[in-house]
Length: 123
Picture 1: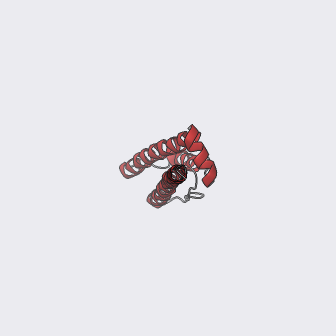
Picture 2: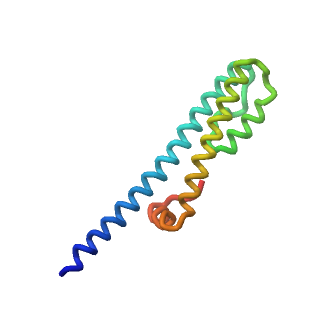
Picture 3: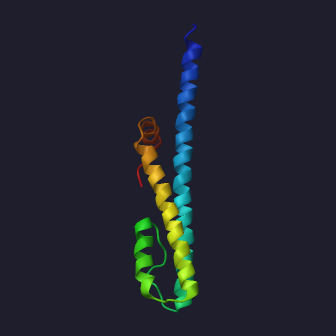
């Protein structure tokens, strides 16, 4: 009868650890999606500033954002465009850092078990 409280405490610890890892990974993924939506809106404003239509200013991945930024790289050399492009590059750097942290957390041993249980995968 003395082992039951130990097992309950251990089970509660494991449950809380899994929930913490799940929440942390979900938060990182939501931050990436939010920043990508902000970058999409900035691409739309750059497209409107240049009066040239971009093929698809909506980006859903980091690679699409980089490709779109390279596509519009030679559109205009105005100060407003350069400021917008610099802001987008900074946001992309932040997104890449968050993606690296997310993937590194999933690779680490006790976190990989919790991520696998909650269905998280590397981005």
